[in-house]
Length: 228
Image 1: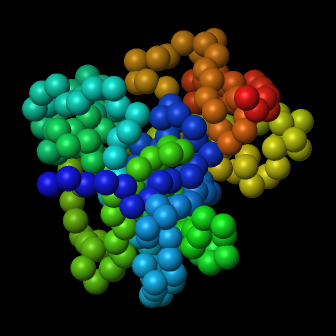
Image 2: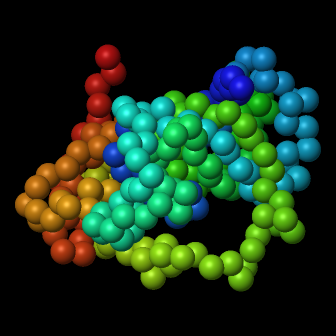
């Protein structure tokens, strides 16, 4: 079976570094679904505004290699314990496909690339190919009593995030709120513990520099990236 993208995702996250480890964690993180020309018609999404959430089936386009075996080391377990690949959501999979649930914020019916679906809570980087879009149906998709194995909510640790006043003033509160959520989940590799190390990531049109010491993320700078 051959599959091809029906849409691509627009996100302030320009690289895979910093992307939330699951969808739905960073509620303030906004993005949009831009359909390919052949699906860029109101008829294709007729009725979708009656739903609150969508399932996105997409591709790990930034991965440089595929799954190397039958087990992986989930970050939620510190990267030291191996689990079977089918028991994890590792991005390194035989077919390189991801699955995410996102919230519909609004639909721009008049966009030049439209209709464009604006969503929140996605864990996709900018330019990610989307292969299918399906409505989230609570009576079939929600399982309140389901067990979550080794990935329980107690495994999700959030850090305090400190953003200088001048950066907040320059970026604006909406962008800072989304950036705060992204950084609070500690985007570093699990084995990085050096509190003096400066990390960098692209967020929207900014080069974000930050360091993490103990339980606090300190944004050092947020310079605008000059357009090439």
